[in-house]
Length: 187
Image (tube, helix red, strand yellow):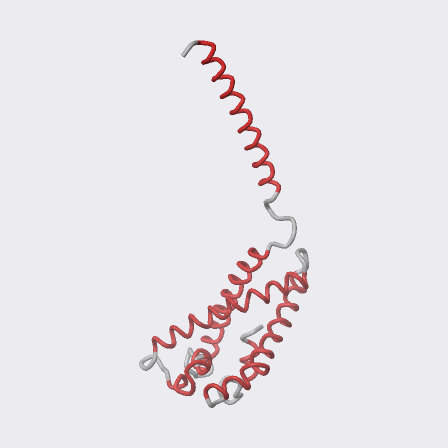
C-alpha cells in the first residue's frame, strides 16, 4: 500500500471518528435531558408506594402484636383473623404449636398485601397532596385514605365475599375483630 492510499484511509478514519463522536454527543445530550423525568413517573410512585405499604403493614403488625399481648390475647391474633379469609374457621385454631408455619406465611401475606395496597394509596396521596405539602396534611390525607380502604375492603368486599366463599364472616365480625382494631390497622 502506498503512502497516498494510507493517508486517504487515515483521513477517512478521522472523518468517521468525528462523525461517531458527534452522534455520541447528540445521544448523550438527549439521554441526559430525559433524566430525571419532568412529568409523572409511574414506576417511581409504584416502587415508593410498595415500600411505604410494606413499612406500614410491618408497623401495623407490630402494634397489633404488642396490643394483643397487652390485653391477654395471642400475639398473632390479627394474623389468625386475617387467615380466615383463605382458610376459614380453622385459622382461628392456630397457635404457636399448631399452625406456626401458616401463621408465619400469614404474616408475610399481610405484609405483601400492605405492599400492594400501598401503591394506589401512595399514588392517591401524591395526587391529592402534591410534592410540597406539609406533614399534617399528608397525615390527614393518609388517615382518610386508610379508613376509606378499610371501609371498602371490609364492608364493600369482605362482608359478602367471605360468607359466600367460606361460609362465615370472621373478618367483619366485631366479636372476633373489634371495629376499632380493624380500622386502626388501616390508619
